[in-house]
Amino acid sequence: MKKSIFGFTSLLFVLLVNAQNNTTKAIKPIKPAAYRTEAYLPLLKNKRVGIFANHTATIGNIHLVDSLQKLGINIVVAFAPEHGFRGKADAGEDVHNYKDAATGIPVISLYGKKSYPSAEDLKEVDVLIFDIQDVGLRYYTYISSLQQFIETAFENNKPLIILDRPNPNGFYVDGPVLDTAYKSFVGMQPIPIVYGMTIGEYASMITGEKWLASKANEKYASFDVKEKRANLIVIPCENYSHQSKYVLPIKPSPNLPDMSSIYWYGSTCFFEGTSLSEGRGTDHPFAIFGSPLLPSSLYSFTPNSREGAKDPKLKGQICFGWNLTGTPENVLKQIDHKVQIQWIIKAFQQFPNKDAFFLKPATDKPTAYYFNKLAGNKEFMEQIKAGTPEADIRKSWEPKLHAFKTIRKKYLLYPDFE
Image (cartoon, rainbow, N blue to C red):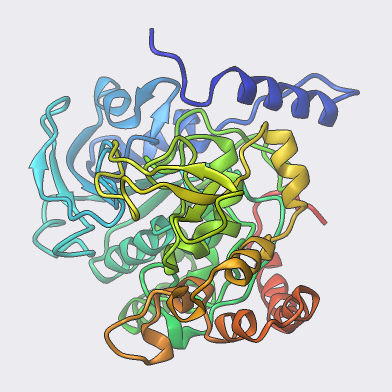
């Protein structure tokens, strides 16, 4: 039997955390909503089901689709996000429509030629399910897919059931809040990089705050109270809170292979908007980063082609930079409930050609820079270039962070961390 990608260290970590948090009572394992079949199977009985899912939609070691088919649920179509239905595609790679070999179910890609199901795609569907393991970071595209799926469901009068899953980064909120002038598929809403919500809570927020497309907002507003409850149903997890340090049993995508990468991703994804390698093509993407132009005295690594990173940035070149990998508990201490901007600042300071540090778009408009789309504003790049102290950068985030936290509180389904 193949060992889990997260291995013994992560297993030991989650056991230790659970033990610390349950010193006076028996440990109650966190149960994702998909496991709670008694809560949603009655809603699927004798219905034609469409499901938006990928390889993380499991009950134990079995894919949700396989489990539902065995339980007699009629799944007529599946929709796939970035990385595909089985999670094998590269980041940003177009995924085409196909028939799933394991189930025979037609799979329609919503990452490539189109991002919304069409009315034709939904013609034979009575009810929709969304089940994907998110990682709780604004630029992780599954929440953008979630928003578009909600909009399509409302506009086509299809009830949507969201099977909630724990957020492995749900224990803090931090980072710059997105300015909607910089809206893109890696950031669609005015939320911080780390927003501290599950997909179920997030879905409730963007619906309740009327952040959906205008047609979907109008449709939802036209529903009475009973229709609103029936058209967006969130099945919650059991035994989860925003103090939980949930260790994922399956890597959520090819370039988040372990908890070290998942924890660092909120701090180091900025490097995707620079000329530096963000660690794709190594064993630890987003925990390793650097460039051939940085001092050779730093940590050295060479990005190479591999699953999920067929053509990584700086492929085959010896890079120098930093290696932040470590045990999950040590990484959590380093992150300290903050987006760690020190690394992007240090890298810029040591990079010899400052003008070539940030990737340049075809036009010089601030909204065209990929770095600014990741940051959610133009100010962060300007602050880095100007040598603004880290404390002052963080202070500039505070007003919008405070406003977001006030909104967030209204939609929480689980006990908060504060």
